[in-house]
Amino acid sequence: MPMPGPSKSLPKILFYTHGLVDGGGERLWACLATAFKQRGYPVIFVQDFEADDNRHNLDPTIRTYTLGSNHFRATRRLAEVLADERPAVALAGVGGSNSKLMAALRLSGAPTQPILTYHGFREWQTGLLSFATYVALPALSARAARIVAVSGGLREQLVQRWRARADKTVCIHNPVFFPTDAAVPTREELQQRDDVVLAVGRFVTEKDFITLLRAFARIDRPKARLVILGKGPQQAKIEAEIARLGLKDRVSLPGYSREPWTYYGQAKCFVSSSSSEPFGNVVVEAMAYGLPVVATACDGPQEILKHGVHGRIVSIGDHIQLAHAIGDTLDDPGDPALRRARADEFSFAVRVPAYVQLIDDVLAKAPRHRGPSAPAFVEPKPRTLARVTR
Image (cartoon, rainbow, N blue to C red):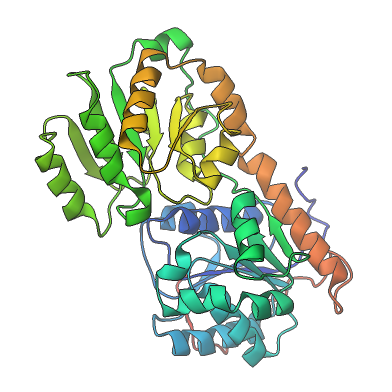
């Protein structure tokens, strides 16, 4: 989609989440806000608290409000931001941000159109407010302009289990950032690499790195190494399992990496061992570098891999199947070029236009707007109590 010209008046967009921590959803929000800014849209970014893990993905010219971590106070301050800024559209994502946005809109009286996004099957288990955000979906989806799910499987669950309105609930696969000049090896070059197996993700239960470790322990390749990038509350449990399996010399945990591209460029195989994965940005990143992917049968990776066309799919939680699939993949890594072509289908250039079209559709149907050219950007009065951090 061509970039809008300077003469076109574009609607102001507000992005809201809890903080730019080391999660895929948070990274998406920073990159998506930046993508809209680069397309000429007036963009505001609002967060409850400051975090550095994904700050580098947010365009430094975007005005950012930090509300505070207290839910009630943050909601009130968000209402003040909405009243002052009066964005045409507000997008919320991750945790209880959806509920807080809807409450703040009611307090603010702003004519903003809310778009709520859901990023996980088990996100409702992460706290009382997150739980309420799923339980309240019938009411939230009635009041929201749209509900966005990041995979078809998640959309189905939101509609069938949580009773979101089907006519307002859409699936938009994540746009995934990766360097456009990412080096893709030839089949022969990949085959000659050391047997390095790579996994990336937060150290949380749903990533199921314990099953991955047990699978790796069964692989009869003494020189094979496993690298798991990430951090999180399960680190001690993962380290204990590495020790129990006698893998200290073969498994490394470098921590969270803001720029994991070097690791993709050195690995021979990528593994997603999750027990639940609504999308899987890291699967796309790995494919962008030509890596073969072994993934468990979660909705997101299955949709990315076209149910086995572009990678190997194994049963969730089955370390024996996973071990066989990793071994077979190391034996024959396949054609990197085909995987890069599939990854390109999830690039920002391809996927961001789906969000542009969504916003255009929402504003075209909004009672106080007549298409994406209104309202024009107006600098707000500095009344809000929220702290402007940029």
